Amino acid sequence: MNQPIQIPRRTFLRGLGAAIALPMLDAMIPVRALAGAASKAPVRMAFLFVPNGANMAEWTPASEGAVFDLPSILQPLQPHRNELLVLSGLTQDKGRANGDGGGDHARSAGSWLTGAQPLKSEGSQIRLGVSADQIAASALGKATRFASLELGLEPGRQGGKCDTGYSCAYSNNISWRNEATPMTREINPRLVFERLFASALPKEVGEGQARRAHFKKSILDFVLEDARSLSAKVGGRDKQKVDEYLTAIRDIELRVENAEQMVAGANNSPALGYEIPEGIPESYEAHSKLMCDMMVLAFQSDVTRICTFMLANEGSNRSYRNIGVNDGHHTLSHHQGDPDKLAKIRDINRFHVQQFAYVLNRLKSIPEGDGTLLDNCMLLYGGGLADGNAHAHDNLPLVMAGRGGGSIVPGRHIRYSSETPMNNLLVSMLERMGAPVANFGDSTGALRGLNG
Image (cartoon, rainbow, N blue to C red; front, side):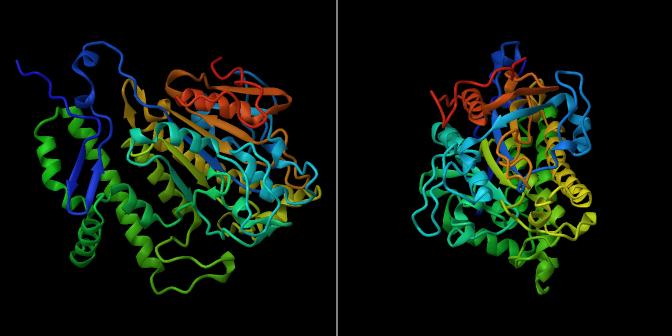
């Protein structure tokens, strides 16, 4: 009887300029694990940031515990209700002025994952702190091809003033390598795609890209020989997994190409408030879904286990005409209790949540081990402001999804006491990632209740 083949977890399909990491296959699991011993998939962690606060009355569930209804803004998450923790009452104190005056938008983004007070400076003297994602990346990055992945949907300057004496670096970044160095987000889908699936050899990358462009080839055409060789070795379930994975890659590649063709030669739309770099879809939703899929593929292939994703920059005044909101988002956030403005904020909030729901749909559709990829993830969605009009940094809008490899019991709304540090949540997430810290910012310990 033939023994099951075993291949290394870090197996790549390789070709000229291409190196495509594979998802978790049965053939990567030790034979003893297939016979019944536990095989533990890695835990992934992502932070998805939305700006300008929320219509909290339409965000917060009325009841606590396992019996709760999702309000209007969170309704798009209903299919995943049992995979969620709605977390109410958490505070990021360093987003507050603390004697520094105006600038709540800059501080809300800057402090969200760092737990640190941004230095009020418009020039090169920026100072903040290391963000939680980068603490995890430093501890775990050697296990994957990339220590972390930073994504965004809007361009943003790293210098100049964006909010009442604060550098734009604070408003436009949530991930910080150290106190003076933000991790620049990538907003161009083509560049993310090439980064995820390109060879590590620069000369090969350039030659491969040129050949693909000239002969109108897919990146998959360059790894066919390796793919056929692998297919001959693995079992039927693994063949199906690889086929579905490569199909997903090709789908994204086609969507990137289509976006580039639509943008090429077209005039930038002044209505969007900024110029669109070549290759970025004009549709915000199409752009968002492409980047969401990049993050999912990166997690599926274990290219990285850590990602941050800014769905818009803090203070963004983008309008959302696709959902009938012509006013700028930041302008609306100063609603002064106007019911019409609050309704429009609700609609923007709900639209952003739909993007999060798309991520969860994708993660839940991918089998991994005895469950799904979502089971082995921790995704925190939300922002550093509650009510945008009041510039409130307490009772932040936060939703966590996934089971963290079995260490989180979702399906609940947990309301914490007033002024509970959000940094307690970050401490708990880092512990589950295998990158524990004794304290973080104003943390008082791990956040209770995540495991039931």
